[in-house]
Image (cartoon, rainbow, N blue to C red; front, top):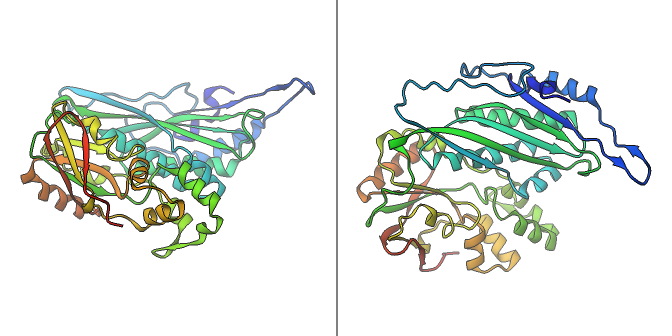
Length: 365
């Protein structure tokens, strides 16, 4: 089916690829339902309608057109990233947490974009499945579009690829890409980090989208764990809490130019993410006893018998994002973040070194 087949998914271009494989043993085809694809398209159009005037084409297009004129920018730079929600999506689909995993994906994607100081603009998604289920596809696309709207960007199109005989029925693989924009002299890339700067940790909602291979193993080894209560929710509900997005908490700070570095804490933990923005002659010193560790990580550590070193490398441990700033600006930044609904606190400082993240002390369990 051509790209125009599901163009109405977001008011521009969306494609549904229908893979047909010939079974060599039985010499027959795995057929797909093109009529179902067309019905899905029609029912999805309303939830994906966009008021973004920069989107220039609507139905029937092979690709999306976006007006790239930004009068408020003198020297605009594009920021681009592709993301997928990892093995958490398997757990989410198994337990019908479809909307949550879509928010996971988009929030992770936006966070990776905004740590450069960028404003998110447009998103393209891809949904790959063994068999298209109309209601699930509608829920996926509607949730992706909502997550984008909540963070002032637009889902401009995408692709739905049905691959019978390649993927099992009921299997869904999600991915998406984003384009953001930032003024060239406002890029936040860590170059302005200096000795004495404070390191602020912004709270996460839990594991976010990292460590789920380990979480699934812990659940497999201890099946009753999924019902264990943590602060009024089951363990399963807690680990499926969506990835937190930090754009609304940070966007008004960008014009003030008081943030010298931002790091999204994902796979690899703080040591393998914060180092990516450090200048070559500086180190970050992180004081582990300052961490406010969410209960869910305590349960994972206890049940899985996991070392502190492995916990720190696998999970964010309650810090989803790190901001680096001159010491005199730290209080101002934390006050602003708190007004936007997020807790944050100082977890370290910058010293001379060789682009390493050094952890000091021990986690307080």
